[in-house]
Structure formats: C-alpha cells, structure tokens
Image (cartoon, rainbow, N blue to C red; front, side, top):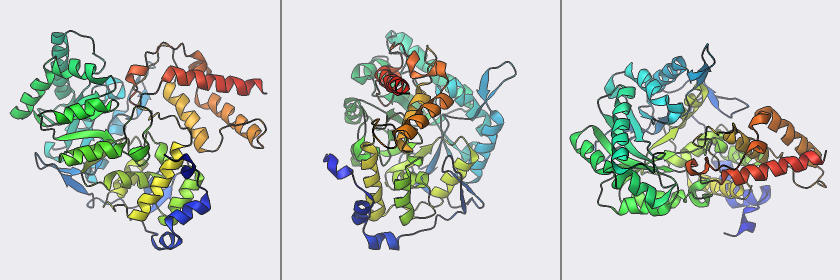
Length: 462
C-alpha cells in the first residue's frame, strides 16, 4: 500500500469525491435526529415500526431483520451486597422495543455478560411468542483447549443443554462454533473434530434441535479456509466486517473483503459482527465527520458504518450491541429501510478507512474477552483512552510541538479520570493470560509496556 496516498488533506479529499457529487447527494435519514454529544447516537421522535429491512435465509426460509441485537453488553447494576448483575428491567424494555420495531434476531453466548447474558436474554424473550424471534448462541469452548477428548465432548454437550435451559427454548435457531481461528488449526481440531462435537452438532441439525449451523471467525485464515473446504453445508458464517477492516484489517484479522467474497462464492450468507469496530467508527474525528456531513448532513458516523456493512447483499444480519435506548432507536432507523451506499459514498468511506489505518489506533474492540485481568488492569479502558486521544487530536507527539503541552495535559488528566490508578498499564506483570483470548490478536502485555513507558516519559517532562 502506498502510505503517501493515505495522508490526504481537506482539498485532496474533496477532489477525490468530486465537487459535483458532494453537492448532489445530500440525503435525509427518515427519522428526526437529535444528536447526543458524547456518543454521536441519535434519539428519534418517530421510529418506524413497519419499515425494517429483512433478508431470507436459504436453508430454513427465515425472514431475518437486517439489524441483529448483539446481547454481549447488557446494562448492569450493583446489588445490595455489592455484586454486579444484569439489569433485567432494562433488558426487558430494550427487547420489547426492538421486537415492536421489527428486530427479530438476537445473538448471545454462554460467556457473554460474565456468563449472565443467555439467562437475561431468555427471560426477556420468553415474554414473547416463539415465532416472533430467532435466537443465535454458541459453543463457547475456546477456553477448554487441553482437555481430553471425552472431557471436551461432555463439556460441549453440557454447554449446549445449558443454553437451551438458560434461554428457555426447545431448539436453537442459529448455532455457532464460537471464535474459531485465534489459536490455529490445533485448537480447531481439538475442540470440534477430535472430540466428535462437530459430528454431534450436525446430527442435532438433522434432528431439528439446531435449525441453522455456522461458525464465528477471528484470526488464522487457514482455519477459515479449512472449514469452507470441508464437505459441510454451512448455513451461515459470522465475520468481522466494517469499512475500516474491509481492506485494512489490523493484527491477525483478515481483510473482510476476502472473508465476505469467499463466503459469497459458496453462496453462504454472512452475519456481521463489529460493524462499528467496538464503537470506534461511531467516534470519528472532526475532519472525517465534516466530509460525511457534506454527503448526508443528517446521518451520524454510526449510521454510515451500519449502511456500509448492510450494503453487501450476502449479509444476512448486522449485529450491534445496543446497550442504551438511543442507540437502538438510531440503528432501527438506519435499516428502516436500508439505503445502500452508492459509489461516491463508498469512496468516501474508503478514504476515511485509509486515514484510520495510518493513525496508530490499537485495534481493540472492547469485547472484554481479555477480562478479568488477574492483576486488576482495565485493559479495554486503557486502550479506549489511548484511541480516544488519537481520535480527539490529544495524542502528544514531540515536546517542541506548539500543541504538546495541551495534548500532554489532556492525555494524562483523561487517563487518571477514565482508568483508576491501580488499574492502569503500570501494573501489568506481562503474565500473558490475556493474549490467547484476544480476538484481535493484540500483544496486550507489549502494548501495556509501551503505553506505560509513554505515560512515564510524559510525567518526567512535567
């Protein structure tokens, strides 16, 4: 890639888009938006109840809402004895609203929400007729590598049965081999082939207890290619797809363009995870937002990212972890109905993606798989602050820079406010327990050392 091509300024950006195109494509979103400053989320006065876009699954003919509800990050609250639990009242309210407005695909897993997501999701959905929703959950045995074959099989069977119980259902609509790829072919073989679990899951699909079978992928492309080469009729595959990762995936992630096209060639539909890249694509810098506003003045960065993901025809559903009502409302509007991107809009996002690629972001999506840290670090919080400072133009560079003192102060004060001192990078012991669980393949201890050195150098310059 020609890195010089990515260092574009305002004039170059507008030349790429074309002045005539910028003037001619201003479009309205279809909802009355009120932008909320912190999140760029949109609350709406009128959210359509009957305009959701649906796509049909090939095996079972289900009409699936293009907006899928990712149930990883339900709101939590403190109990009287100081413990944390999912706020069930909030979950019920969000699920009710989602179903009322056309959302019918709910994606969870045994490990989501500190192991509480399936139960909370099941309680909320049980209050609705079974034909009003589709449940996706997973065999999350990626942390069981190293068990004997029979132990792996028995643990997988137990996990599946517990999912049925927690979700309060008799069958699973969409079941996935969870998080295949990060530890390569040996882990895949151990988890699903040597143990006999994949053969067992295929039998459950034949018997109807699983209606559609797929896998979710991160990491080693050899695993992805191997699974597609097998004589298995996969009903769907879940991949990370967004405009930043389309051609510029970082770390061990694979360009989404390759993953999507390989599935499309085989007529396998995609379910999209991380359309906002852990929220990063909803928090673009001022320059990027200005360019997008010239094309669609009413649309938030989040809506742009969601439209990109869904503009690919083989995408079945786009998952978004909507913790708050305003996020849910905005995302419903984004797909009620979907307005696919045109060529000029695609080009705009492609140029912004190149700028993001060159910016030095750490590719954390705040999925929490690295947590809890045995030494108490807030790993996602540390990365989130670092990325936020890049995004906001508060990343200190050289002491001679006129902006250095302001940026240094903003970085250090923000660090102490957003991450308690005992949970900061300085306390990392490089134990490495987090690394195998990172879906983005970040060398977390190495990044902690780098960030801590960066912080300490700034402190010494006081």
